Amino acid sequence: MAETREAPRSRKWTKPRYVPKRKVCAFCADKTQVMDYRKPEKLLFFITERGKIAPRRKSGTCAKHQRMLAREIKRARHLALLPHAPVHIHELEMSR
Image 1: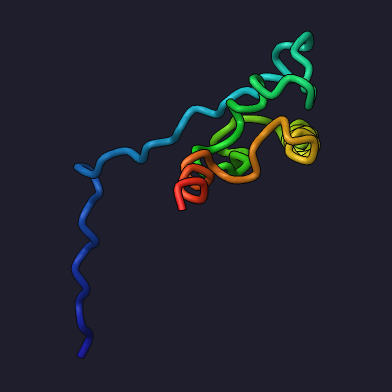
Image 2: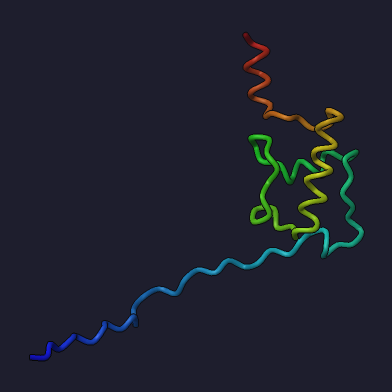
């Protein structure tokens, strides 16, 4: 005895998936913009509020420029131009 299967329901009313627009690397688009560890105010845009280097999906940089950016941020941290930890952690340590 053969069993009959019901036809699968059509997906006529499902929402289309959200596909985010791909960000263009700011350094590839504007060739005059240069990364430099001596300009920490420009590097602050690529650091999270916790003091971490922002990932590529958040910063929108390409792989090549993300590696260069990480190197420049680490250089600036080494020279104390950028903090290793967020400011609020420093404030807690000073108040003790």
